[in-house]
Image 1 (cartoon, rainbow, N blue to C red):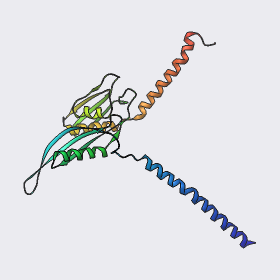
Image 2: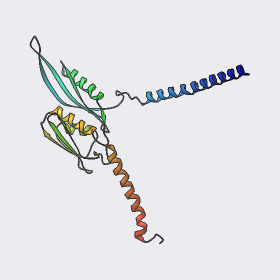
Image 3: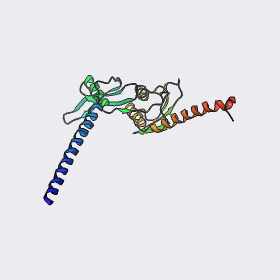
Image 4: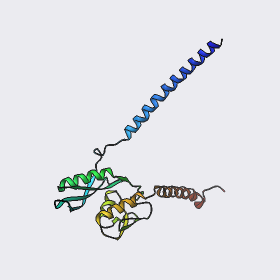
Length: 216
């Protein structure tokens, strides 16, 4: 009887293993498929580009001086995404194309409020440049200057107050704004939205008691 029992156990184990394999295979495939679906090609998305600076740069080499062009481009979709790109080349057009590609690689997403503003006040610094961004009420517009304004406009922010301190370097100010926007906390806005919804809910209920319609 013992060999029979052993054979049965082996058969059962093999069936269980086959079942496990059958179950696990489609799961892994489906997970991979989901991952593939989430990938979006940047070429299909429509972005707006603004050339902030085109500068002539010289580099001292053994033979003499080598002259190249450096382009700084701000790229965004006017909704939530924005990025700053830098490109260097012997030709201006090549430098701009390189900057656009670099900007697409370094895109960031920004949490926006219902009023198309930022959730809270934020300070950031890059090099010798320091900036401060403050949320504003609806109808204020973008009150900022230089490269900060272009970054904020292409990010889709419509109401904001911006101030730059320290150096007035275009590239460093643009990078400081992106650094500030990455530090924004989305939970602050979600909390405010929830509290607003609660206030509306309690106001509706309190109207009954104010009018005297509620039964005591």
